[in-house]
Length: 103
Image 1: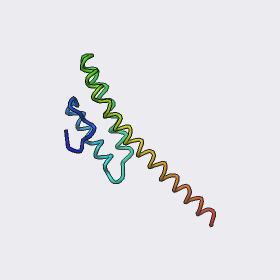
Image 2: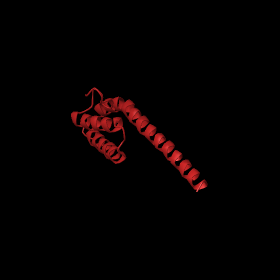
Image 3: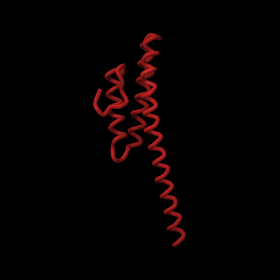
Image 4: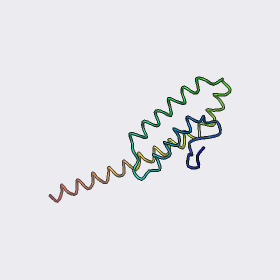
């Protein structure tokens, strides 16, 4: 687990950790690449679904319990990006209205 990989835990498989590290890098960039983030989150979901299918019920429960706070962090990060985008878009719309008003 990398120092700035905050989406992995003790039970995270190596391949999932690589995906998580990529997501962290995208989220920490000055300008977030929405398409790359969407692709990586989808890849992460598909990996987890396939991985869970290989585990026993007890292992699934343990992994899922460890994964829940990670999903909460990821959800909060994406929600914050969405909120920032809406705020930015709202500012652009207000600016456009002001320009039209003085045209």
